[in-house]
Length: 121
Image 1 (cartoon, rainbow, N blue to C red):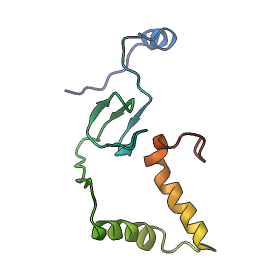
Image 2 (cartoon, rainbow, N blue to C red):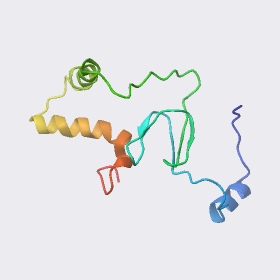
Image 3 (cartoon, rainbow, N blue to C red):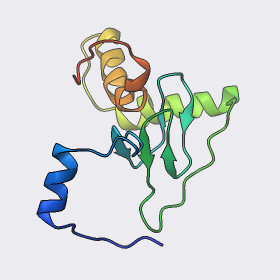
Image 4 (cartoon, rainbow, N blue to C red):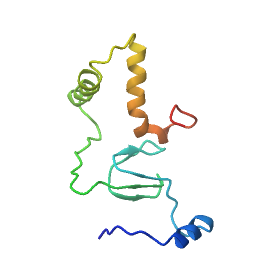
């Protein structure tokens, strides 16, 4: 069961100042599948200890099945969605500009796999 709560401010202050070392580490809460540091796709709801994140799907959201090994047709469809639907009307000056736009769209999903700085850090 999930129930929204607002903890008392003094409890929050104590937890921030003196975190319980027995609690699992949590770096972020995500609402869409992402890749962890080792390249594992995190798509199941709940806490993921290795990725140090909580995956939560909003109420009423039905996630689509993500194939472990997408077919060439599925890859072409994803490519078309990005380039032919989402970015089709943007006047890129060069192909490299389009590549940067695609990279910026993908970064939030793969950021944990990058060891070092990125434009979002």
